[in-house]
Image (cartoon, rainbow, N blue to C red):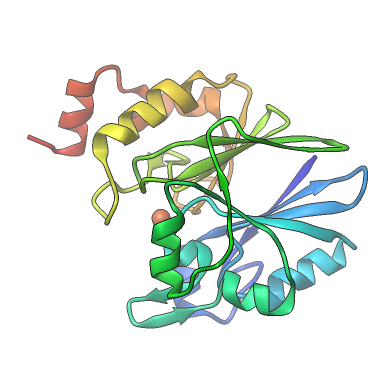
Length: 234
Ligand SMILES: [Fe+2]
């Protein structure tokens, strides 16, 4: 299983000023044995993303959503219309996987009730070349989820960034949930796990869990009390 990381504003959506500021990553998870792929958070430039898929001669199996925010699924942000899964569904009829706790939020953002396959933590997509495991990591949003590819590569959405973590002050965010998602779920994955975040906010686009456990203060935190202090909660 291979992961292609697309930086919006650079690899796709190159003419979009807001995209360049937001620094989102879109991912293509590819099963190299059968040329099938899954798109993670396709937004900003659907044509550009589909072009990347075509260049690799891949067939799209499904859309995977990390969370409901419009910079990940499309919708309205700061009064600006971002392309996303609705525009993709206009071109291709594809199944969508979203965590069961995120479905209402997605509906609200898109203004439309799209059919999603509701996922739970531990669910898996099994394919010829391996598997994608869904990990529910609430905190940034109630139904945020990460995708663990072949137990080795983690697409972490806005839960964990290189040298950072997602905000917990947006609608549906919960600082305590974020603490437990980071410390009891992501920090427990094998140290050699490669991290693919939802935004390019760090010094480099990818990292390893070992490196983050060593130097990311949001992952190194040892207690809920320390976490409260770190998040400025009194
Ligand atoms: Fe987000």
